[in-house]
Amino acid sequence: METALLLLVLGVFSGTLGSLLGIGGGMIVIPVLTVMMGLPIRYAIGASIIAVIATSSGATIAYLRDDLLNLRVAMFLEIATTVGAITGAVLTGIIHPLWLETLFGCFLLYSCYNMIHKLWGKGKVEKAADISPDKWANKLKLNGTYYDKVTMSQNDYEVTHVPGGFAMMYGAGLASGLLGIGSGVFKVIAMDTIMKMPLKPSSATSNLMMGVTAAASATVYFFDGAIKPEIAAPLALGILVGAAIGTRIMQWIQPRLLRIIFVPILFYMGLQMFLKGFGVSF
Image 1 (cartoon, rainbow, N blue to C red):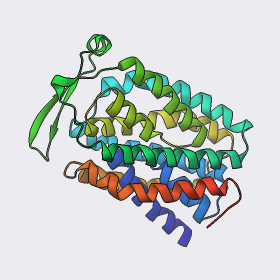
Image 2 (image 1 turned 180 degrees about the vertical axis):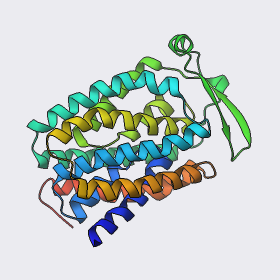
Image 3 (image 1 turned 90 degrees about the vertical axis):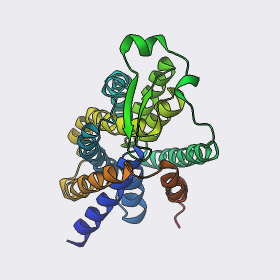
């Protein structure tokens, strides 16, 4: 009973942050389940896959209602992430768990570096007029618009560097299938940094894509016996609640503040996972 309650609380926490930042709950769920609760990483990854699908489902409903999602961008890029996710899920059967933990620690530390870099580059906010028109974005009608409740304004935006974003999405899908995470950080970076989409539509679109990517690899984990209902069920329930909370907060908060709060947590988790892969715990 205590374990189920703990998983429920963990789900609410990871679902809130995951939906806010568009990064899913995997990067929070896996370190907590393995480092703090001692669960084998194989089962932690299986639970994380369900957690990512739950985060995506809960957040997508709200973001669709608020018209923050760019469905055309999501469906186009999902082609690359789905192929990458299936490739990664197949590779998990031939890679040792310690290597997975080390790899996941590296992924978290790399994500931490990207968030710090984003904070330092805060002054470089691209305007629509500064973004070069992209022929693929025009052909595929990827440009969009959204209403920002903080500034109380309608913002039109253009999408650029579509081939670069598409290539990075394959890598994001590979990491998702291999590590059982949503790879939302890679997806947000691809849309926000490479394709020059605003951060809020990038995060909202990333939430939708994570669920589709995770579902592509979930079948492999299910038939491999890595998904335990007693772990995944309370976790998914908490995440659905957390995702609903996160989508409400996201409309009224500056992403920079969230990154400042999240960076030290991400660094601590990443360092623990990395060292655990070498048999060092603290």
